[in-house]
Structure formats: structure tokens, C-alpha cells
Image (tube, rainbow over all chains, first blue to last red; front, side):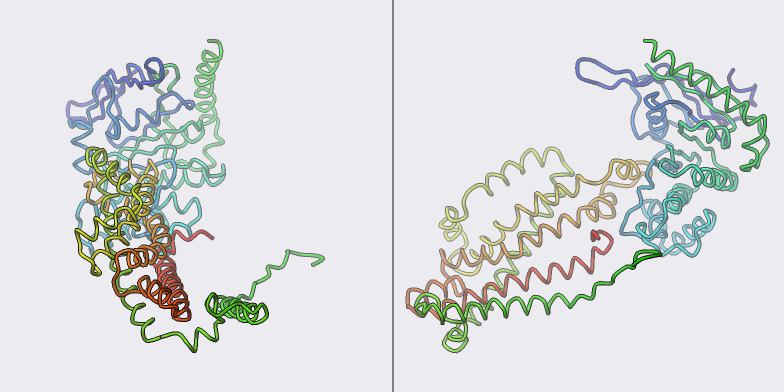
Amino acid sequence: MGAAAAPAEARTVTIDGVGMDFAVKGGTFTALDDIALELPEGGFTTLLGPSGCGKSTLLRIIADVIEPTRGTVDLFGMTPRQARTSGLFGFVFQDPVLLPWRSALGNVELPLEAQGVPKAERRERAMAQLQLVGLDGFEDRLPAKLSGGMARRVAIARALVVEPSILFLDEPFNGLDELRRRQMNVELQRIWAASGTTALLVTHNVAEAVFLSDTVIVMGRNPGHVIERRTIDLPRPRDIDNALSADFIAHEQELTQLLSGDYRSVVDE
Amino acid sequence: MSIGLPRIRRRVSMPAWLATAIVVLIVLAIWQLAVTVLGVSANVLPAPSLIAVDANWPLVLEAALNTTLATLAGFAVGNAVGLALAVLICASRTFSDIVYPIAVVVRAIPIVALAPFITLAFGRGPGATVVVAALIVFFPTLVNVILGLRSVPGETIELLKVMNASTVFGYLKVRIPFAMPSFVSALKISAPNAVLGVMTAEWIIGGTGLGRLVVQSWLGLDITTMWGAVLVSAVVASVLFSIVSLAERALLGWAVRT
């Protein structure tokens, strides 16, 4: 359980006693209850769980998009609001949410524009980021002229261009076919390693969680809670062939079992 | 087409303006023919050829110029006010609660009923005409732009928050551009409406435009000039509509549905 004895200087993301209630017709619905987590800086952590377990809600609480009903979140000694307003966040959504009238480059420049970065620097940093995600040569394309995978790359570049301390990924490859998803996982691993940022991914895809993560937090429903924290100690960089190794499959099976335990308990109710 | 991929047929289409011109010519020809064959009195519906020869064109064109200027002014003012109110209504709950009901009430009063008041307030000159046109124009714009501003996807709003973007940045760079297609739709509705507003105002209030000329020539039994004014007002409305459509294609290529 928990993180290993860390040096006193270690910077972490600490979530303590976080709960979230939503008002619904005839009472309240508890989406999350008593969540306690510690995420190490620079790691890749995944919140894995079925739909309705509150994983996206938890992600949004940490990113200060919504406020929790209970509990505290500490990001390297800052509140979520302080971290967000200091420009430490990059967020990739389920849809690429690109502005359709802006080119790929213009979309990646957007967060820098919001921060008031001068035009020349903006352009340079956005171009570098597009290059990192493998899109140089496509910078002038409008989103309508990008494939699904390319649009996701632009969204990742836009999240990383501010050099965030935390990269939030909310099911970023939703809607891609399985093969494209695996390719994007390989790409994401490379991009994340190059950026050196702390990553927090939300997914319901077990293989994706195992492939990308140092740590997987398995979550269950009713109310949303943490079932288990797993360390994925597979060597990096991982490639698609690793996903066929015995170790990889063992991790997949164990996580799947934990998840189906949750499904069963819900069905039994 | 027996084997292989179906051939994509490229439709060879004529330019839109040419199609329009042909349709207009056909309508005029039918009109001409019908009037001649059926022996319709020239005091009711003169043939196009007679209108062309007999109408007092200098008078019509001068009136058309005045109407056009008033229309453009009313169109600009009404849409600017509609756009600005829509942004403020979306940005502030309080502002919305105060202003939206007023806007609805103003819109609900028939413009004809307001005309006397507008004359008292703005005189009988072009000012009153512009105000009437603006009043007709602003409401569809207001409603459409509010709709557009609210159609911004939820994740895009969250993106603005995560980026720590200021409210002004959010409106200027994201929300208002998202509302532009709705705004342009409103402009297309309001272009002919602005002409209608101006001519109605000229009819009721007076002035020097086409609306007034229609009444005057009608009362003076100068039916060809009356019809000349009617046709030119149609041209003014169509041209304005076409300009908006051209602007739409130039500015909103990203949003044009194919």
C-alpha cells in the first residue's frame, strides 16, 4: 500500500478524503467517497474503472475544473486553484475540442495566447510541440482536414505547449479504433517521456492502462471509490510487442478481475 | 458502370448569379406575356416593358439611394446592438434578468404601434426610419447569437478554464467566433427585414425613400413608378442578402456545411 518511504523533499500530488455529491431529484448522489491517493511527481498514473465510477470527476477535481464537496487536494504544495492559475496544467479531453476555424498551429498556440506569450515565441514553441507529436508539415491544416488520430495529436500538443507540471488525459483516445489507439499509446508514451511531466490518465481500457502506467488506481462504483493501487513495473520504453509478454498479460488479467469484481457487486445489489 | 468503383460524376454547374439572372428573366417574360394575353389593365399591373419605359426612374433611383442608406444604417445599428446585448446577456446573469424581458417586450409591441412614439422621439427624418429598421433587426440577432454563444461545447468551456484564460479572452477568441455562424444566419434573416423596416417606416412616418414613393405614386395613380419602386426595393433586399452570403462564405469557410 501507499508510496514507498520517500525522501522528505519529494513533491507529490496528495488527495485526501475527497468526496463529491451531486444534487439529484429527491436527494443527493455520491459520485466519489473518501478518496485518498498519492501520486509521485514525474510518474504516469492511471485512474482505471467502469463508467460511472467517478474517475473523470476525480480528474476534474484535481484539475480545479470542479470543486469537491469534501476533502483536500495538494499539488506540489499548492491548491488546485493556485496550480491552475499558475498555468501548470495541460488537459486532453475525450474529444480533441479543437477550434474549427484555427489551423493545427493556431490551436496549439491558443493556451500561450491566453497566457500573453508574444507571437514569435508562441509560434516557435507551438511548432516545436507539433514536431514532437509528429505533425510537422500539417501545421496549416484546419481541424476538419485532420484525421482522428492527427486531431488527438494536436490536442496533446496543445496540452503540452505550456510545459505543464501535470498532464491530465481524460480518455484521450476515445472513439479511435483499437489499432489506432495502440499506436497512439506508443506515441503518448514517447511524448510523455520526452516532456518529463507528471501524467494522470483516465481510461476504462485495461490494456491501455497497463501499457502506459507506472501506477494504476482501480476504481469501483456506488459510490466511486478506490479498489486498489497497482504498480506496473514493466520496463520502459514499452512497445506493442511487450503487450504480448506474460508479465503484461498477468497485469491485464489481475486488473480485469478486480474490475469484474466491481461489476459483480453492482449487479448483485 | 459495370465493374470497379462507381464513377464520381462531377456536376458541371453554372455560376449562381447566372442561374438567378435566368430565373428573373423567365419571371419577367411570363409576367409580360400574362399581362398582354389576359389584357390586365396597366393601372393595376403594368407590363415590365411599360414599367421600364414609363416609370419615373430618376425619382425611383433617388428614393432607392435614400432607402438603401437608411437600411444599411438600421442593419448595422440593429445588429451591433443585438450582438452586444447577446454577449452581455450570456456573460452576466443579472444583466440577462434585467435586459432580456425588456428586449422581449420591445419586440412584442407591433412596430406600427411604436411608430408615432418614434416620430416624437426622433423626428420625421431618416433618424426615425433607421430606428425602426434597427428595432426590427436586433431581435433575431439577439436570439440567434445567444443560441450560438450557448452552443459552445462543454469541454471547450473547460479548456478555457484549464488554460486559465480570462473571460474577455474566452469571449473574443472562442465564444464569439463559435457564435459567428448563428450571427451570420441572423444577418441573412435581417437583411431583407431591414429593407422591410425602412419601407414600413417611410410608409408610416414619411421621408424620401421607396416606401414613401410607393404611397405617393399610388395616390397619384403613377402606377408604373409605383411598380418601379417595388421592383427596385426587391433588388435592394436581394443585393444586401447576397452580400451577406458572400461574406459568410469568405469568413466562415470552416463552418460551411457540405
